[in-house]
Image (tube, rainbow, N blue to C red; front, side, top):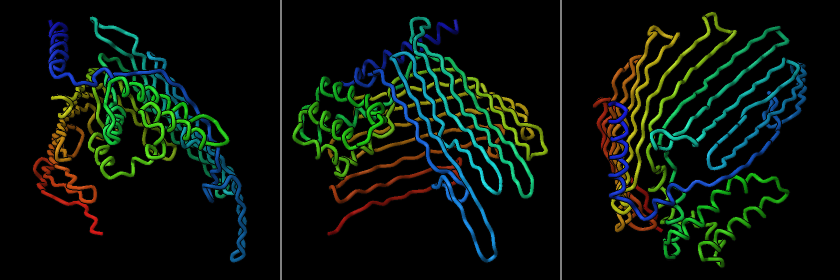
Length: 394
């Protein structure tokens, strides 16, 4: 019965969204394959992080130091329409010098497979995590330390949420150049933008060729092939920048999922035992545009029971409820946003926290923008109103 009720709620939510379907719904859920990778190696000496090799001699007092170090940043991303895989090793480095040896290995990874079904609904499995290991060996005095952190996550969910800011930027670009906004044009440009990661990470001796080719092709798809330069610089327009800001961070779709989130920390410098934590997160998110794309709403909720070996509380419980609404005025150029956030954390000094915010942003003209808002923070611990803006006089 519970499973049936769960499915019914989801179906009702999807059906309700359908009553308010906007003109670009099929673009918001566009998902195309891509792949790219890059490897960069640079200097990472302890004396000067930009140097691969550094020798210093001081005469007063006499002192000699030598350092050598290299850092490596490898990023790989691939999506085939079903499977998504991403790796990143930013921050990995090795240093050798007259004072000692140090090595830091870091890595972020994420995998998601969308090729599953549950009761006729799209489902997915996910795995991600962060790992780091830091080894330091000192020569004078002789010392050593080892620190490691592991935080993997594995989960299963149904539904899918998409980032749609890029789609809205395409629509804003068409409107900025007084071009007709059609689903076909938006889709064609969105398909090109899906290749950005692959294009911009291509190994080349002249990066300007990649940029030139991309912006020329985008201008052609938009129907302004003779204005590639204006398109490249459109972000400098005050009106365009305001439009971009008010559509920032938008998401679309729904999902509910469960994740296991273990966390482990060990330091040889500490006299205490290694720290371990395990959270089980049950969460859901719903985001959509309503009323012909003039009203954006998003809701998120999670329940996270857990255990931890650090602190005085072995069993923990956390929950977070977030709600956001943003209304877009067509004329005047203005948008209003309200948020409500409720956090409950049994291990925190303040178990319950409530924050409520509201803000109105208004572009009176391209050289005059204003904003005003109100906040209730820290469960009525702080109540504030504010206003400001920027106006260029001459």
